[in-house]
Amino acid sequence: MLNQRNLYRIAAAIELITGVTLLLLPGFIVQMLFQAKAIGAEPYLAQLYGLALIGLGVACWSQPCPMSAQRGITIYNVVAAVFLFALIAKAISGGLMVLAAASLHLVLGALMIIDQLKQRSI
Image: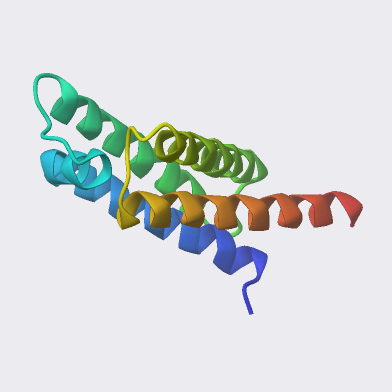
């Protein structure tokens, strides 16, 4: 069963892995997401984004995940899902990787919203 403890730990692990991957292989990730070669400042921006994801992952790793970190990662997942689905709709980005990432963010964001609503009602 996916409980609160596991939900935020799984999300933190995903963000940590993604962050490290962006830091080490920015061009590859840009290529996979946008089906375009990373040029100019794009690899550096991808690395900076990777660092931010590492920070988010670390903030959510502790048990229990602090409420402020829960809110932050929830907002990130919901907004990331909307952004990625918008890119797909505008045909700026495509492929299974983007669809999978958008769907994962959507599911995580929805589960986190449900969890936080439950916490408010307790």
